[in-house]
Length: 168
Ligand SMILES: NC(=O)c1ccc[n+]([C@@H]2O[C@H](COP(=O)([O-])OP(=O)(O)OC[C@H]3O[C@@H](n4cnc5c(N)ncnc54)[C@H](OP(=O)(O)O)[C@@H]3O)[C@@H](O)[C@H]2O)c1
Image 1 (tube, rainbow, N blue to C red):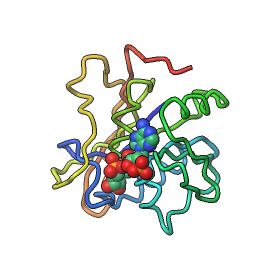
Image 2 (cartoon, helix red, strand yellow):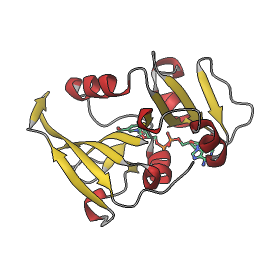
Image 3 (spheres, rainbow, N blue to C red):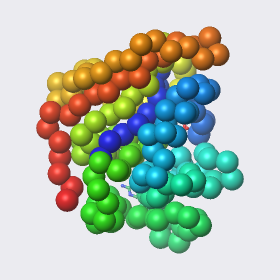
Image 4 (cartoon, rainbow, N blue to C red):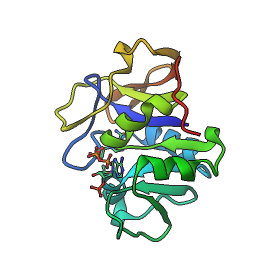
């Protein structure tokens, strides 16, 4: 599995239940990368989408401890063990962890790659990602040229995991 995320220089990813940036090129990258794949998210990230609806043309898996939680078009898992059972049905290459903070930080050890859009800004936030630059188990394998949207500069990075934890 892989994770996909947009972060500020201080590894900030969210504030008050919402995203920090409005970057059309990054949204397009996210859509192109995850289309027709499996996306795994926490309940709070699902509820941050318009009307709390799942992403179109993707298999949406949502984690919540609420056993009564239902949302049309979503597969609900109540624990990491339940999630790992569900994920056995899919090709590992097709699984993308799409947030938020809790889900990224629980699942990054199982990811082979982290697709991290790094934005050249330091932002006030209440949700942060693990710092992959300070983790010796991970290395930067790709950095794109600089992109710019709405006056904000950013690059697309790929980090790779030296010691992937197995879930299957
Ligand atoms: N920058 C980005 O690329 C990006 C991407 C996605 C999200 N975000 C941001 O991240 C923030 C949301 O992150 P968050 O950490 O607050 O919430 P989250 O990770 O989206 O969801 C957390 C919820 O997931 C459920 N959950 C987590 N671990 C679980 C487990 N092991 N078993 C069962 N359920 C589990 C729990 O739901 P219950 O409370 O229902 O039990 C928990 O409250 C928002 O600001 C959002 O905009 C940023």
